[in-house]
Image 1: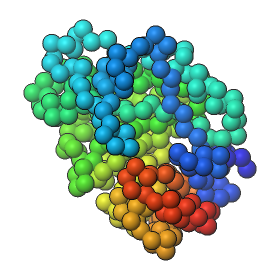
Image 2: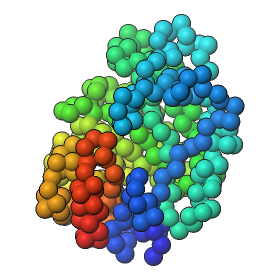
Image 3: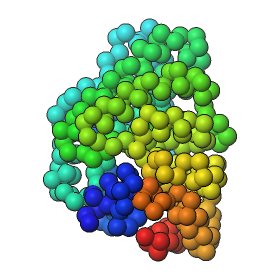
Length: 317
């Protein structure tokens, strides 16, 4: 069984020969999955280091990804003249097509980078975005449609380039709740995600949805509208056994050992124990669990703990 077939079977509960492993940013040659992001516009020339095509600039003070320091639509008077990037440019899809050609037997996820709500807040500003959902709903609709339309153009190109799945990276949770109310999320974002998920499925691909934080309240909604894989990196916010009891067998989990707790501060024995709990809680006899291993020294993961994660997940395949 090739890695590509193994992953597809795990996602759709069709009896993979063993549990797939997704090595995210190290030891990728061992991975059943590779993720490749879309390419930049050849015509774009940044005016300062870290500037993106959307007009905001990344600022980094340590080894983490950083955060945007500018908001291109800091005032709503700028919205009508704002020109978003072109999501249909052929060069955007060359990295995906090349990865498909070079790795025909590996499951290929096409990444859209920071998506949806998070991208909207980068353009407008986080606090202003939260207020404007109430104070300027029509303008927020216009901004959201701009972002989601760009992503839909990417999705169509990914399918032509040979991707197996499309990855969303849209963090919705704080440590104990959503950033907006679940009802507001369902009103404003659920229909947009459903349109995107439906498009992905119509084009023969799967949906990979990452969201950090406490997003428990919207997991049933994401499953209902067709998320095929959920990538949740802080399982201790919910409880491994609780998540398994409520959702195992309904969606494929692509999860690491908790990146805030055991993966960073745990002993080798605690990491092995955590992995066994994940396997017992999230996997089924027919599939539904893919191990996710990420080297995370930027937030304190030691090399010893990284190796323990690899050994632990390999031991339960």
